[in-house]
Structures are given as C-alpha cells and as structure tokens.
Length: 81
Image 1 (cartoon, rainbow, N blue to C red):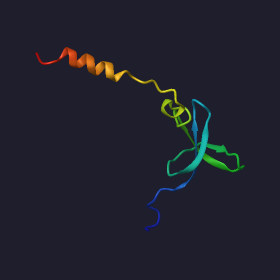
Image 2: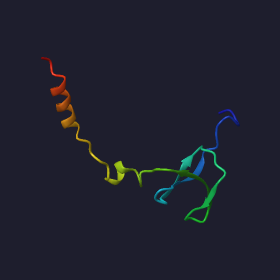
Image 3: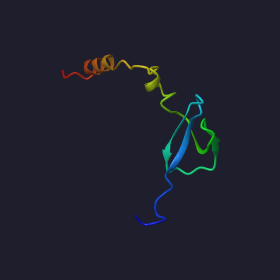
Image 4: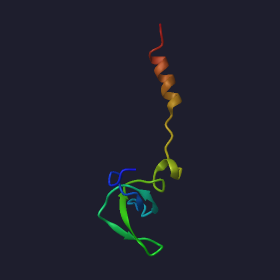
C-alpha cells in the first residue's frame, strides 16, 4: 500500500442522542469530540440521531400500513368498464 493515502481506521464510539445508547466500533469518520469509554480509554465520539436501539423497526414499535385495503380501493376505482 502507498503510505499516507488511506484514512485513519480506528476505534470510534457512536452515541444515539435519542436514547443515550452508545457502542464502540471501528470507523474512518473524522470528529473532534471524544468520550471516556467503559474500559477507561478515551475514543473519538460520533453523535447520531437514530440507531438500532431507537429505530422503530428494531424496537418492534413500527406501524403497519393497511396496504391491502388501499390496493382493493384502487382496483375498484380504476377497474376497466
């Protein structure tokens, strides 16, 4: 590999702002904020609006749309005469 052309791949903490959930992973994203993690080390911090901890799909609070009724209504309205 050529030196100095690849981004810095390092440990980063992602924090969900809506639920205060945080997880440690690796990323190349740049940030100036840091946070002290559970292991006592300080890592770069990325704040996100939504994560798997607060997204309705993963929490089971997703609303189901009545697609079947809409399709039948469309077919009745635009049925060939």
